[in-house]
Image (cartoon, rainbow, N blue to C red; front, side):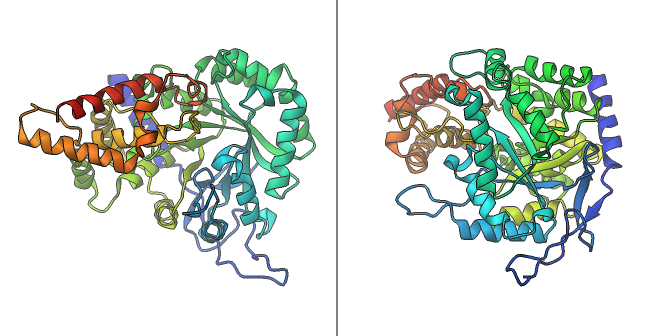
Length: 467
């Protein structure tokens, strides 16, 4: 425990001195071609947004990265439709306020994210932003060499570019198609020669930085870093999940996950910059119960829970960018404010957040981040919504408990059941899970989703039977 405390103090001491390079993007204006005459990446004036420099490429990257995985949609449309006009407005705002890193994938937003991202960014000079996308060849049908190559080529087409700034092997460490994590990794990237092909594309300038995003089996993470040490493959960056809860408790929350401290330290000692995903843990850290919120307010009366989480994720000096999936303009504005410029977490603030992490961990929430990789469910269950409602009620102390005859329990039970029906359509609730296990191989957090669905369904049935 003493070593943990000293490690955190050293971590914060060195990190607090690291946020130096700041800059802001000048307001965009239109040129004769109808494109915004934005300044080059990281070369805007009137300092505000915090930037970090990638030591491998010299890229000056905004500390806030725009995750294009939860884009606004047109409500009431007959099928899922991205609201392109709103996406354009948000991208314009982001660029004006210094955000220059945009992260997408072939599988985000039901496969429509890259097109929407490409449409929004193509309206601006190509040298005013960095595009990060992924080789998301999860299904076994996409493992053959020609299929994986076709996926990469489609990404360039959809993004309206002839090169990608940051290309990731997507979510390494997970299992797929009934195979374990190691078999899956080799099937996706090695047996088909795709990793070597990507290295060739980098040599040709079609990929500027090559890295991977990590979820799951630590053997794969360690193996890829060993290859880096041996000179077999060079990683320009790595994307990991980091927040103040996962720093020490990722493995405790889910035994199949890895603590963020280990992941960050392994990258730090090799000089590999880290891109951060899930700084809010799927929104879980943005909504805190009253007793947690009181502690935060004692330290800073004006700071929101989201601001605390983003400041924590951005403080370590080897963080290149912190991704946020921002559906609404107000989220983008708040996050831009948090990083314009970043106020690094102090040792006193770090100690508070570690205490709060202890308390949050004790609540035993389901570690769902709302990434939607498990969707669609073959039986129509809205898995993220079920978990989200349960976790929110758990965090806010709204799970009914007590004696059945107690009036407070009856009132809480009724309120919870009504809320459940409002948040999740009845035909999409936990009781429709048949345990087909289709979702298991898709969850980056490796949650035993059928088990949790059965647990929640039993809880709901107990509440109904006590009426």
